[in-house]
Length: 279
Length: 313
Image (cartoon, rainbow over all chains, first blue to last red; front, side):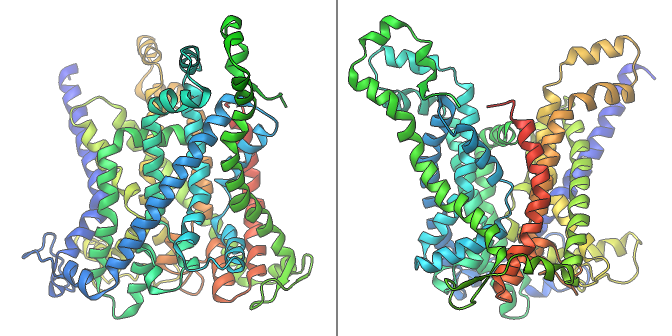
């Protein structure tokens, strides 16, 4: 075989395998959307239709008008946005402090942040539940926002710290020489330079709180406080399993995340590998 | 450790430093503490304190209604664990679950990373598409797979019947002997993108000249993989395996949403058993003991991870 035809066969093989793998990986996602667009007589059939014969938004309309789904959606937005803002505020300064200064206990703090990523949330939730009952914080947005910060802040801090570590200190030095105050240098030089990493952390904390399940399940108990994951999970038990409506709900909880991801993919993937590889 | 000081200021130009006012000197001394204190307070109050008190609560028994009333019972809960059959099931299931998921994710993720490391037109599209499982929120993933696995109308049974692998429908989540396998498959699916993307980053940092040199000296594809690719990926692989092991070991959402530990505890794992004890059976302190066993197991891994990441930072 000539090397050229060998290369073509390698390409054909690569495309075939890769396409097969990709189809398997995205099939559940497509199946979710496809089911959500079907009438129930097409859903419960022994021979599944890959593409709905007559696409319908009936499941979405029913979901939005006959269930508390809009409330869940609103609650999730409130909690995720608030968590993101608090996380960005606290972890940017925390990370900057840990990256640029040496002080007693710095090493211990970094280790604590790393350990917290490995600690089982399930065990954490027991004391948090007890504390929130004592503080009378149960079943409130506050309880969820505070609880979500427990995983968003350590994660954001570590990720931003590794980004700040990579920024040469000379950047602020130059600003200080020009008469900028140390705080001014952070706001005018460091934060703008770190904007991609900050955006990635913001998106991560938004996505994490958007889909968080166990804290929301434990810390809320009234219909008006439920977030999307908990609300949707409770819809399963309400009546016979209405797969069309559940898939519509799953699609609506997924699409915002997918769009954010596609749009910010570059930052997210580099942030993800940075956070994971440099921990 | 070291005293408080502005790292780069000590290296700065003395002439510039002398120009700074006293106010700046104060700022310089106080700034690190001002910057970190919100983080320290927050993390201390909502993370460190609950983490410690979670482990400590395994040594107490609390009144289920009056949570402030508690009695020290020492290791009594841990003794109970030894005679708790469900705990044993949860323990061995957790090991099977973790090993199965981590192995599956790593093997398939590495395969995908190797393919995506080739240069070919359309690579970017494949790379974006394979990220989808990772992006789908856990609740949507759990429900969609429940639907795919459904015994009566599930598309998986339909597909397997079409290609002739099975003749009667399988109850993927309802059959105790395969339910754990089914949930493992779902979690493997969910985690492949992360492993693939991180390993791909590792592959791309390998110097191409090494491959060229190997090719010149006559190494075949397999030899190049075995002697260059794998050793170069060692560091990043360790990180990935440690992280996925920790995440899988602590994973609660997927199993709770898909099976709640059932049928007949065949998918019971430590996090779910912890949750059920605490919030369904109202045995908070026993739950803490169950989870503490998990913490002890994971700390071995955690300490190792801390040591390997110590060189950095």
